[in-house]
Image (cartoon, rainbow, N blue to C red; front, side, top):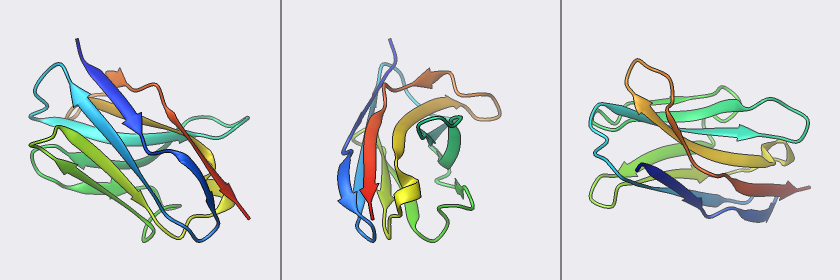
Length: 118
């Protein structure tokens, strides 16, 4: 059974940093894409960043480019989202997701709350 467990959320002031972790288990993730999405109150879930498990190639939403980085530690089966220069508009529940490359995201975590105050 695949599980994705996020951690690292919390409250931070604008300009601050947080690092989210997503611990993945239940299968190997070769040829998978691992991603972060977020959903703010009253808004639809939106893509934030993605990393290819094998390749390490990354993709970012325009709204976070230059501020967020995504990485993975294969030995720990963990994906990270480092968030710097945070803004109040980054406030949302952040979700980790995984899916085969070229397909949609099959697996989702339960989410972790991130709140940025001005």
